[in-house]
Length: 423
Image (cartoon, rainbow, N blue to C red; front, side, top):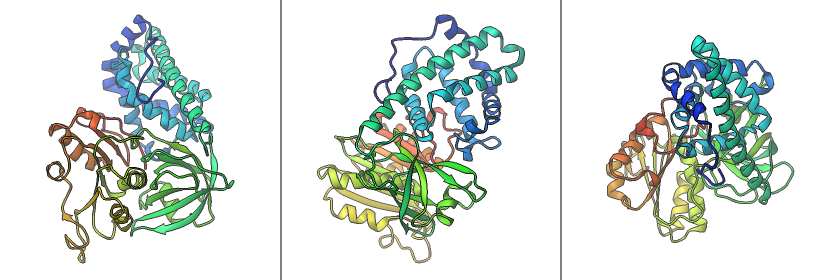
């Protein structure tokens, strides 16, 4: 796959492999999550391999177990039409860049997956079926490795680019709301940073109090530049180390390890149609990155920044967003509060009570020509993405990402584009 979302189809699995893999679809539908759960259990026996993963989504019945099961099922169903998996391939390749997954790690996954299939399916996992899945795995792995190699080469060739983990220093810590704090990150080596694509994320390797390390993804919330990144993190009381580290332990001067910007959800380099940025909660962070880029580089682009928050206590970066809009003649900002605080009033602290709806978007934005970028919790996307489709917005004009686990998002009504897992 040489370009975003495109798979090179010059080769394919042997016909007998395709047939056996497709015959396994009913078993995957019935036992897919059991297989992936068993696969992760095997993988995590190796501490080095275990350290490569984000364990926030790996718990009992964890979201990643179900997300991987859905991905394997999708591969089995589309093994004759791999171009249909282009967005999934791209998303996985970017995740591997973020977590610094390398070619030498693939054999561990192959061994664990095939052993898990045998464990769960028992006698139904015949030698022929296991051989077929081995061939199918390595065929897909080769596609992924090629794409990841291309991504790494591109990153390293650009000014400020790097490969693997690089140390950054927290230069500023800025409280944005009762629950969101921003962090300005500058390279500890004093060098430049690669200019990210607005909407992409960084992956962090964070130290915890017990000296273990956790890996987490956070969107970059500033526009592209050569000097620094900004992330804006919501404090999650029930979090598993990431947000608690940033809010409770990270201070100005703290150093953290970061891989290069990654992610396939971003504003195109030359947007040629009106842009509607729709966010819920801390999902505004990639939208602020996009808005900064629009304000700086696209003075003629019509853009609408639509954000939903609980109330003024949780609403982050509002003054910054409105200052960007005031400097750009064609940017409109509207905010919705679903649970206004006692001192909130529509028309003063925010624009509307309630939730963002597609009917409102239809009446207030250039609905027939816009590209819609959406980011927020799963419930937020489940309310808006299918509704946009039913309202006649074509899939190529809807781009979305959510913050939180990805389980349950493979249903037809929410699969118009790929979803990345980000916390």
